Image (cartoon, rainbow, N blue to C red; front, side, top):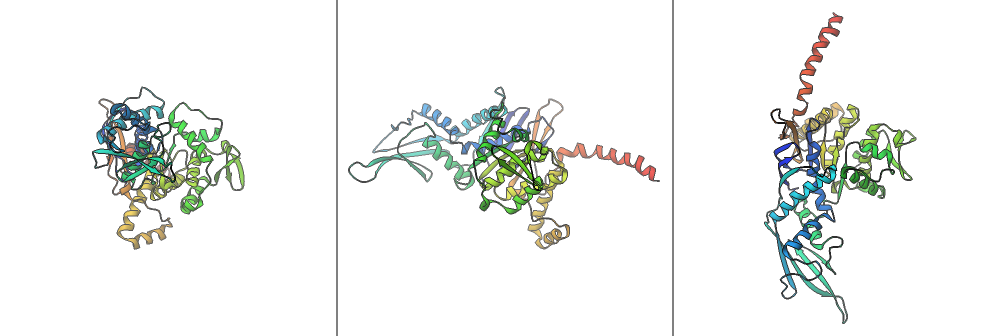
Length: 430
């Protein structure tokens, strides 16, 4: 994957920050600083290439500004051929504005303020579309087809139109996906798993309308997943078994409602623990989609989980990342991050000394799960005391994720706990 680069002038309280989008992104920091904002922003740059409608907005703008018609009359026609160009700068400016509109929709906040700049990882400064007509078929009345080409990709269609998706938008997004992800079929699905998603799982299908795009998207995604059959040939057995262990069972559909099946007992999901409801949607996704073709915005995967289950959730995330999933994750859990660090260091050890790695696995009875730090990008959000602005600090993850976000919780409080233990418990023992 080639990295899209984003410069944030302003995003909520965040000021003057740079982001490099990688397959696995992790955001930590105090509540209320903008972790979700940044995660949603990063998710946008996957979603926009998969939406079969959004780029139509851009091409409608191009239609108006360049005088290009989508009804069959092309500009500069000469011998049945025509072409027009759009610049990389035009695309990046539109994406920057559209990303902010996406944030407004997802947050349900039309007054949300943001100012960003985009740098697409493409060398070409100009995208030139070539168009020509060709006749096909047999007999005295051959049919006329339209052919549109860009950077070696080509699509044929009978009629130009923008009622669904413009052929220009279709071709353009395939080219971008091919450029960034290596193949235009490598990115097919976008999913959003927001905070408090468990509530929506409990009330399904009663909830059909939500006040924020974030929750509405989740509802729409789950409704679509319910129509899809499981794909056992595409599923990692290790991943399936691990999420089954976290749930101590499975989430199933019974008619139009979710149920929780555990130890031979079937319960309505509303009667299951909060952790079950939160994790259930992720299990549905893992069972029903090829995760190698997915991008997933996952807020607080550790929510409501016991610390040992949080550790297992880190393994799930690593297995998904290793399987090709692109994820944007927010977290408040030091257990979750510590485990990710263990997996990173296991990867380093395996690369350095595989024999020692295998010995360690045998000694500690640990699974064969590691995490390559090269696919991870971690950011820590911190608020300055002077003006209340938030800085976004990129962390060096080459040997593990720094624990900036937990230092204040782990240092003085831990020191106090030790002192109180010495003054009370140890004192009594003496």
